[in-house]
Image (tube, rainbow, N blue to C red; front, side):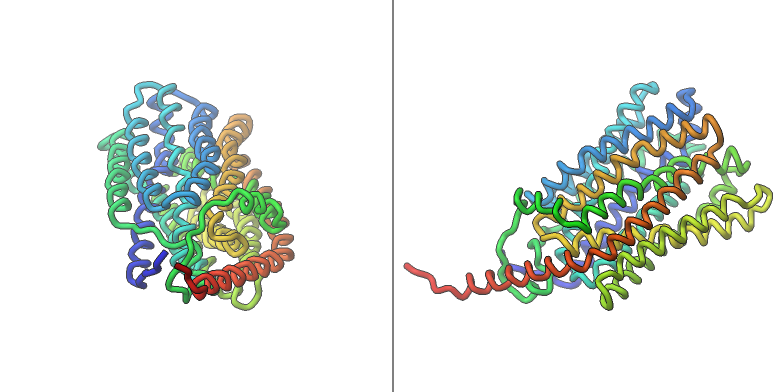
Length: 437
């Protein structure tokens, strides 16, 4: 495969995927700030609403392995266009649902396209060298909290005018537009092109999913630890995403306007935390192979401590609560870009979508029950206790697992670099071999 990727074009691809993730996250997370009007429309309680959240998460989780295989086997750009098309269609279906059972089913179907991100990160990995990926992934992941904030603004400003269904019509339509942009504008990149050992080769062999290599993923000790960390690591995100707005409304007596004023700066800082975490991970990775995991561990430990302090602040002290929420928001995304980068630091290019899909399958398969679990705890106690118990316990356990990963990961990184050296030698020898008539 002839390689011809300009620097300008690869940043165009980043921009397209940033826009996709921004709008997709806005659509996905809109249901958080729209929880109360949706519950009022269908006359449901916290447990039933928790089931709505969990349904979409379970569908997305179970489809990760399939999407991962497809991304490693076929062209990623066209599959991403398909994912965007599905996003738009399923959001429209959930907007027209006439009753709770239909809404539960159609909202679960929106999880189909939520498994699309391994293809994005895998394709980006073939545009950018390992020492740059943390920053690029951090930049892309800025779109997630910014999409959350965009969803919050849409819900606050438009739901009263258009209703929650009208807001979903808008975001679903944007998914259809993005599908066309990705289909026409994003080109496939050769797998492995950005690896240092292969970067200078003008022609590169075609590498696709290999079952034997994929099964070998389960023999990498550091990757298995990342899978284990993923199981507990997303519990806090799902609880905060789906229940924190209602917590502010019902237990801290915030109005819609005060929720927006409190959450907007926290979400902006959260967005910055992704890039800062990725930047710090790249910085330390150049000095030690354990650098990314050390930054990830710092993030989850600090997040656990700061959230505990934040949630203990009296209800009447809204200023201090908002300030501490902002401080917490800075650290909790540190782990995300570094975990993605580490998965790619230790896996061959043709199984990277599969590896990250397994990571996300385990993350979301475990954490899909988090909103329902939080709803059950809240019904018997309070949302305050539900959020604090699930988040802090998950982060503390995750920090322990990341510490062990930091200890083991240099061996798996070294193994990959040796594999890429051997692949480069093979590519060079094939190009140099004389042809016979």
